[in-house]
Image (tube, rainbow, N blue to C red; front, side, top):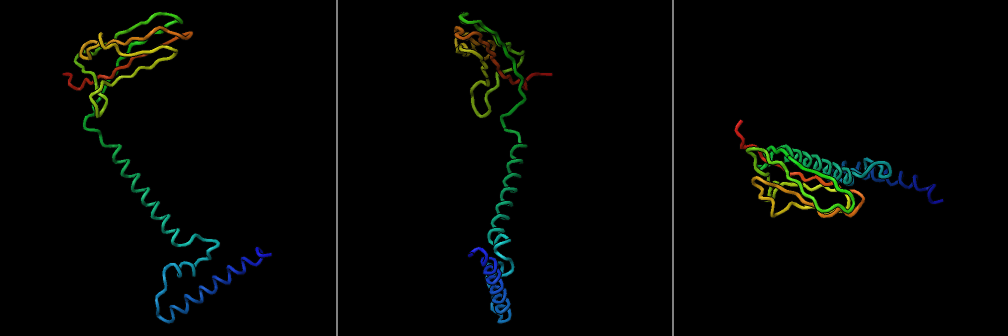
Length: 172
């Protein structure tokens, strides 16, 4: 039974608030923005003005942050340059011994560093149960790059050694 009378109670409260707002305006005294908001909108059907103001503020903040992020994405990093990549790859059958391959070194290029570091920009992509690495003894990172893998312990193994190069100092 209480639910039947609730809309009537809400309407009565809204009417009291409207009368209070009108009375306050006639007296010349100021009313708070919250009271005015509640007096003008039935709280049951419309978000309260304070909530609407907070949502508008959050929306504007999100738009502002999004524009800052988009600006940051369009600015190139200081140490970023155009790169090219070279790779070598091979496959192994189960039980096949360790293997290696040489990544071709483009003429006039240097090995690119991972942006913001001094580490060579490389990737080792492998499939199957084997362990792969860039061979420290056979690689000098100036003229020779060699990738090696251990014995294949699954039905089939495959690997690709990828190195990025900076050729921006090349004379065209």
